[in-house]
Image 1 (tube, helix red, strand yellow):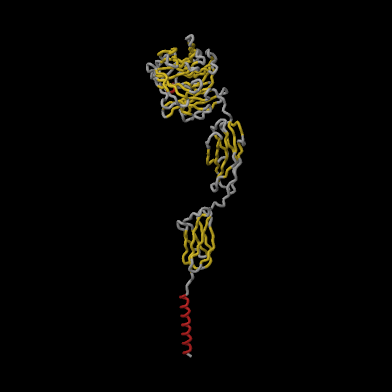
Image 2 (cartoon, rainbow, N blue to C red):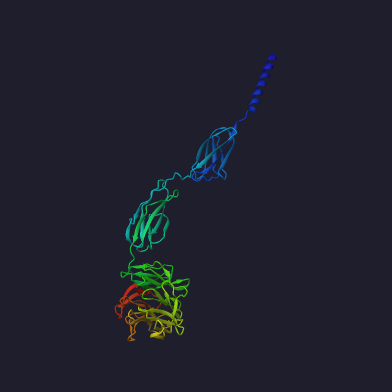
Length: 495
C-alpha cells in the first residue's frame, strides 16, 4: 500500500513537470506595422504626428518624412489612429500578420477643411453704372454672413478705364470706405472680397461708377500746405480743386489755352524747373533739365509761354533761354550786358516783344525794359531804381505793360516791400497809371495779371509785414471796384 502511494505521488510530479516544460517553450506570434502620415491636399509629410494602436494603446511619433513603425507586435486586428494639431484625426484598420510588415497611409485633412466660406456681401452704394459722381466717393456694402461665425475681414479692389492703376485696400473691418482723389471723367470698377481666415477670398460681382467731367475752372492760384506750395484751380463759385501733389513744392501756374496745359515751377533735386500738366493735374511732364531756372529768390522767378503753346522763355542768372514744351531745342536768346540777373519775363501774344525785369543778386538796382527777338532794347520803363519791382504782363495788343513797384524805395536783406503799387505803362504815350491808388495803407499789391478780357486785373494784396495771409483780388483796369476772390492764396492766373 505504501509503495502504491509512492508511485502515485511520483507520477503526479512527473506530469506536473512535463506540463510546465511545455508552457515554457510555447511563443507568441508577432509582426510589424509600418506606415506614413501625409497632408491630404498635397501629400507633404507630417512630422511628429502621434500614431496610436488599439487595443494596446501603444503610440509612436512620425519622423521628419512622416514615417512610423511598430515592431514585434502581436498578430491580430488593430484600430490605428493618427493625429496632429491643426489636422483632423485619421483612423485606419490593420491586421498584423505573423512575421510580415503591414503598411498603411494616413491622409490627414487640415482642421479647417470642414469650415465653410462666408457668403459674398451685396454692393449697396454707389449703384451700378452710377454717373456724375464727385472725386470723393463713399463705398457701401452689406455685412457678409459666415456659417461658422468666423470673424471676417473685407478687401477692396478698384480699377479704372483710364490706366492700369489698381487701388487695393486690405483688412477693412467696416462695411463702408471713402476713396478720394479720383480722376474727373474716369469710369471706375470695384468689388469687395471677404475672408474668414480659413478659406479663399469670396468675391462680389463687379460694379462700376463714373466721375463727373472735369469742370472748366479758369482761376489758378497757389496756397501753402504744410510747408509746401500747392497749385489749385477754382471756378467763379469758389469751388476749389488741388492739382499738385501735397508733398511737392509747386508754384507760379501759367495756363495756355492753345496747348490746353498748365505750366508751373517745381523743385526737383534742389533745382527749379518748368513742368506741365493737364488742367486736372494729371500727366505731369518735366520741360527743363540741363539748365534750371536760377536767380534771385526762386519764388520771384517767372517764365512765359508762347501764344500757341509750343515753347517757353525762361531766365537763368543773366541769360534768357528758349525751349520747346517737350524739352527739346534749348537755346540762349539773350544775355544782359551788365551781368544783371533776369528774374521775370513775359512774351507778347504776337511773339515780337519780350518784357524783362533785371536786378542785382540782392534783388535791387531794378530795371524793367522790353527787347525784340534779336535782343534789341525797345522801351525802358524802369532803370536801376531803388526798391522792389516785378509782376510783368504785356497786353494782347502790345499797347500796355502791367508791372509793380515799391514806391517807398525801401531795401533790406529780407527783400521786404513796404508800399508796392500796380502800374500800367502805355507804350504809345509812355504814360504810367497807378492802379493801386485805392489800396489800404500798409499793404502791397503784387503779382498782377490782365484778365482774359483785359477789363480787369487779378492780383494779390497782403500786409507789408511779410508774414500775413495773402488774398487774391480783382480790380477794374481804372483802379476802381476792388473785389476779394480767394483767401489764403497768391500767384494767381486767369486765362
